[in-house]
Image 1 (cartoon, rainbow, N blue to C red):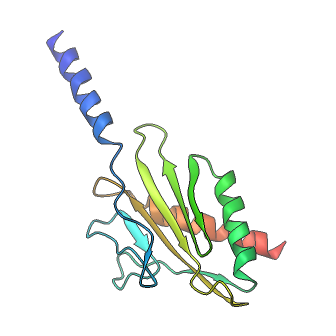
Image 2 (image 1 turned 90 degrees about the horizontal axis):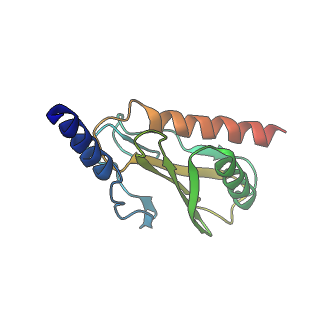
Length: 151
């Protein structure tokens, strides 16, 4: 009986702690927030190889690209779009089992241009490693984006 109580209490503490608090996100001086030193974040504006991921390249109007990104986010499971601004989108992805939350951001630096790129950042709110989930998520979104643009 004592062992069961310890297991239940430990589980509750872990689950309560898994919600995580959202750090300050968004764009500041044309930059998405830097990744922490932990390996659970990718950012197309990162200067270090461990966190760097390629931005999403676009060959059309950024407003059309933004519409495609929003459609992709709507169809992905565990995704909630939280912020939509002229040149910025933020979504949250929540894992099924432990309810870990990852913040995913898209920055359209030149919204008036006909060509360009979308800067991306995907990061876990808590923990150390994400087992590559954030990198895989951005690559999945990139793949869906390319497919939408080729239709």
